[in-house]
Image (tube, rainbow, N blue to C red; front, side, top):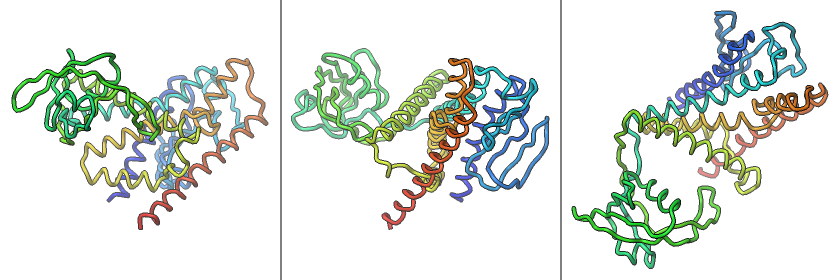
Length: 352
């Protein structure tokens, strides 16, 4: 069942990505020969509205084959107003960007759906107070519920951290303890900490940790839109920074995961709850959007780079350079996929 869920989720994400390319291409009058979910041998197809819609044997991706554009033949050129290569560079860039944009849009829709269904988050209730911290000195205790900081109403634990790290000076905490309201003035201190990439950082802290109680957010339609926007931006920033840390060597290459890891994550999420599955699907969708925008010639980002070059230099890259960089791009992608699978297999043996 987990494998079926994985294939359905991946196919759904690929479909949405390729649909972005398809709609943008058709908007600019580019003929689309094939809309494929999967690679390799065709196992199902239907010709409709001038396009062959197909499902292929290897369900680990997909493609839109446009007139005048073919990744398997980078030097391909075709004449006519309905050809991709006769469009202006800015139009081609929009067609290329539409795929990753569709992934970001899908993630926002999924996060919005999660918000309407009842997003889960940590309650703003203290579980631990570090000895000798400013919170301990102020008299904060376990089971204290933080209901307001200064003039901002607090509903989630994440909001506490945001207020502490983004404001200056002392803060006025409104604490609910045994149905009594207590006010504490606390001046956060700069302390050593770690970010999500295990880097040592310094930030404003007061020395408290959550109790771990999970609550359901009751968000209005407007608040759900804000939630979806914030979550999509946060996921995009997190993944983009992760790629940066990977390139700079802060995150080791052993952390790269492949299709096996993705399949297990999706399978575990599907067994947990529908909200967990939607959350993982949204995160993977953002991941696909970010990764496809990397300036690797075989990806959308690489093709965007070529078109930006043409816009600036008023000429296309030479055919030899274009072919060489595209082949190198495929080698880089293939190497990353093999590394991901190798890491996945290593983790399986280590866990056993």
